[in-house]
Image (cartoon, rainbow, N blue to C red; front, side, top):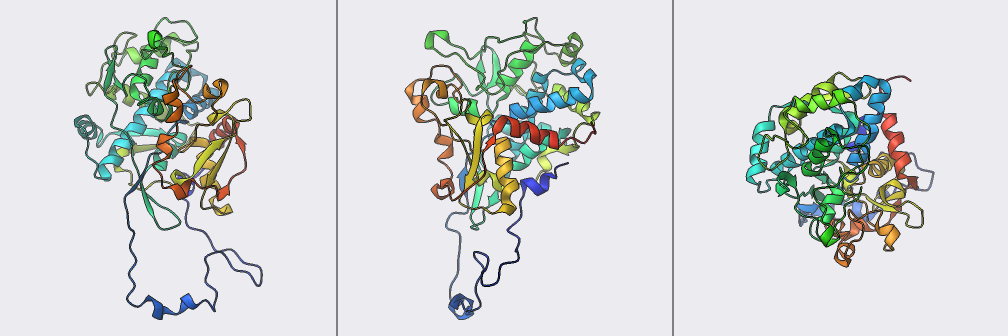
Length: 405
């Protein structure tokens, strides 16, 4: 089983025995004049900007959720009589926004009215969180890099835009919103997937509420939470019906947010009885502000491969490294907090964009959310080995299993 703290909060470099005549980088030699403390006289050092912001993503959370669901039903086939994968996607997205909203509060950001009300209703609410979801929550937060600089996660407001009568969206898909739809799942999309999962729709693709054929806006699976329906057990539909959810109705605890706390608690109850993963009972509002150094590590796909982006060949890179940070690089490959969108040919664009034929504005601003981190952190000083994102992600989820097979 993977220790979340060990991965999500890697410690500083450990001193390793050095060959004779050599020393670790950054370790002062006995004859280094800096060792003379007289030069520290009258010198004070301060961080010029202790509130630098970065905008990490959760672009692989839905994919991780699907792997979690697969492992749950492998251990207990009857799970699919209670929940369908769309329920778990919705649950993971809700946990994510609970964490994001609390982090904004801890960072003293100005909260929207909906965010303030959300914190008031989830404070004291304990939910069961499987380890693969816990690692995503632990990743975000304030960090101190190996240079001593501080970086703080920054996120968009809780989505409350209404689309076709339902809330929880970033708004219509546009040049201003497509990056958010591709990088941070929202409850509008995942609650819509829940409604379709309990409908009589056949397996396969359904029409998203964000679809606008007249404007050539046809969403694809890069719209996080928008996936083709599978075969569903009728018994699982009752689980949503008990929370008042139907194919045409989605009651919410907060207007225009897509948050149904009764439904979330019910899913938590199902997860509390599973043994597949380490599951932690947690009030998310009590989590610390600190996050993982992985937020300062970038990821890039290899565009020459047939499948690019998070499912294809990818690698991590940063301006700091060392084998003792290999787990931080690996965590980045699983959750892709800073995945650059590469590839400008039509086939490669389809690998990262949430609509099939994007205008040039979408292409030009595709990596805008990566530009918030200071330029030095985007320099490839250290790189990881290349991995198949899809296979590596699935393998690491399996590494978190607590059951014997």
